[in-house]
Image (cartoon, rainbow, N blue to C red):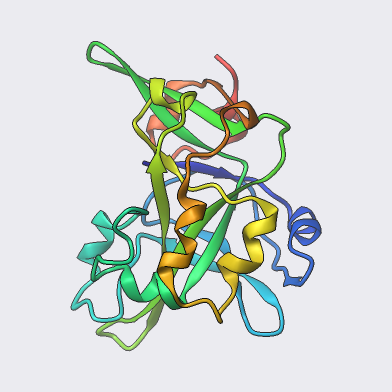
Length: 220
């Protein structure tokens, strides 16, 4: 799964990755947790845009926002069938640009966080889906979920799931509005290459979602 991540990427760096993007100024985040807001990339017709969204997808038909507690991740194997996700996977796909994500190993009753990142230190781009929801008070909330797949051999020592990581050649297909056949996207859901990722243990202070500092990614 993916339950925490780092998003410390300057807008200028994102502009180099997504040539058509209209970027907003964003501050670095080192411990993004569910229910928090972060910037994602989506298609806006003639350009891509970087927009703030809350993590935990709320489908348009939801009566309240409680479902968001269970929709931070969407299993790629069933995303096209699940009521909460099947509209978004067809029409509302996005990319979540991150520096990396956290996963925990277990030693008895103890849990140790690890930071997983691209081996070449480049931006990691996660496959996401989003929705907008009209709240009872009349406000509109935009939310997203991160797709997951089976873990590769590197991550398997920490967890049996990992986020779906996209390659640059797949961005146009993933963000494209003309592709509404969810089954044509299934080839993107394979575990990412082991040799392109790396990880190391980080301090336990990551366990507190209120702590957001570069110290979160310090090597132990």
